[in-house]
Image (cartoon, rainbow, N blue to C red; front, top):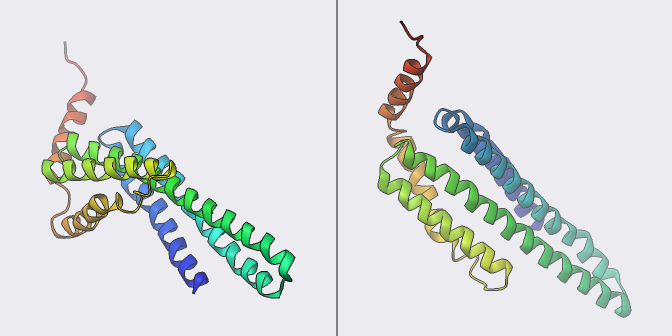
Length: 189
């Protein structure tokens, strides 16, 4: 069961990195620095979640050794398991904090470029700010980490449905293309 869970998390890692790659050309049209920052943050997020999965997978051989161990070694293996569990939690919280940063970059561009309705971009900004603050506070011991994921998580589900049903605001792309073409035209004296 642990291995199946780890495989599912690895699929999420691939999805996180792919999300950054797929959004890069869209964000680049509106702000290249934010596009690069978003891509980098999604890759860092994916790396920390992959590290978390590694700590989960380490528990499998550790558990096998625990079952074979004598009493003095069992205490040592329990301590090691506790250490890996805490490391797994920190890797998850740091990865989710990075997700909060990347989400803020994404939603600020969605807002400024008017790619989606403003209320939807503001909901995303608030949701990702809550994730970021909640995960940072969880790293410091507050225990609010997963609870802080609710507003941003609901936004992600809603946003996915929105983009499938309605897509991005096409006029934002037309407006951006017209600005780019007028900047590229030579001046006539």
